[in-house]
Image: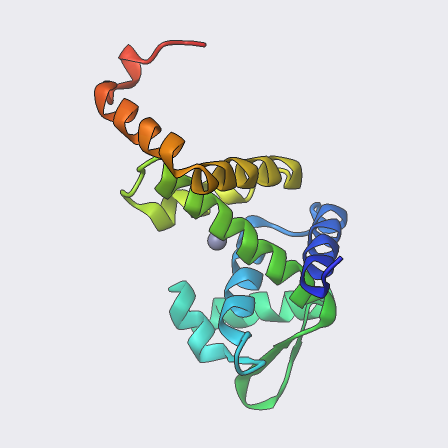
Length: 166
Ligand code: ZN
C-alpha cells in the first residue's frame, strides 16, 4: 500500500471512530486547515477564519476544541499545526470533497458546486464515497461511454416531476 493511501485509510478509520464527537463544522475546519497547510505545514488563525467566513472568536473556539481532541496544536502567534491524526483525517476529508465535487461535475451539476459538495459530503459513509469514486473513474476511463451519457442527458427533461422511478 502506498504511503499516501495508508494515510487516507487511517483517516477514514479515525473519522469512523470519532464520528460521534466530530460535527460537520469540525470536519469543515479540519478539511480547510489540511487543504491550506499542505505546503507550509501550518495555517494562521486569521487566514483560517477568513477562508471559512467566520469571526475570529468562533474560529478560535473551534480550534481550541480541536486541539483538546488532539487533532491539532495551537502555537504562539496564531499558528495552527495539524497532529498526525489531524493530518490523516484532513487528507481523507479533502479526498472525499474532491470525489463528490468531481461526481457533481461529471453529472453536469455546476450550479453552487461548492455549496452542494459541502452539503453532501458530511453524511456519506466511506463505502459510499468509494463507490462514487469508482463511478467517476469509470466515466473518465471510458470517455466514449461518458460522451454517450452526456448526449443522453441532453435528451432528458430537467424537472423532477418527469423523472422516472427506477
Ligand atoms: Zn468540503
